[in-house]
Length: 275
Image 1 (cartoon, rainbow, N blue to C red):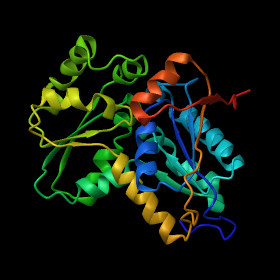
Image 2: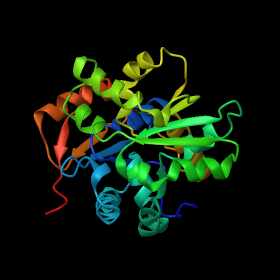
Image 3: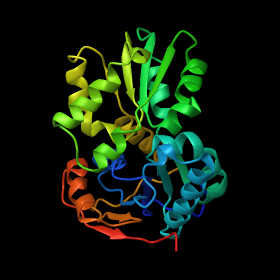
């Protein structure tokens, strides 16, 4: 999407997710583009998005997009697979030329469709993402020889949000999901939720590191760079910026959990955009 002539490189990049998962994307963007200012919004009041209706997710996403536009963001990254699957077009239509809009699904599809050796690809994600069938339809369109097998894993997001990972409880739930016949004999597994990189070591352990796990963070960061460059929107400043992080419902536990994702202490502010 061509950027509006009114957009400038020193404006921030807006990133949103239903919770802390999108911080994996934010971290990758920060590493790729260290001089870009980030504004992150976690919609903790409504997480998880995976069991919400498509209309609700579109409504939440558009309201958050307006919040990010109000904060003068030049780009909006939908760092949530469910919102990317169900609300990307709605957000893009709403935003128009006021910002560049990026989702987390297309970069993964572009990457995996080029891997000719991969024939059977598994996807684990929320109910909403799997029900949309977006990975299967997009990958099949890009590479007709690839088959996609989706499995809804609704317990994983709340499990991660509550801090249950790298322990007996998380391993038990992860193993129960990954043992299901639906994703047996796959050549690769797409982590179809930005929360899932936090449990990546446990998933690798289940597969004995024998199949590639694909998450969106690095691919999205590369696309963000390419789009900013194409639209002449890279920040010309060489100063390290101050990033801002917002949630729709603040808790101390949530702030502590962010350290696992962003690898540094960050201060969360509450933004009650629903009132």
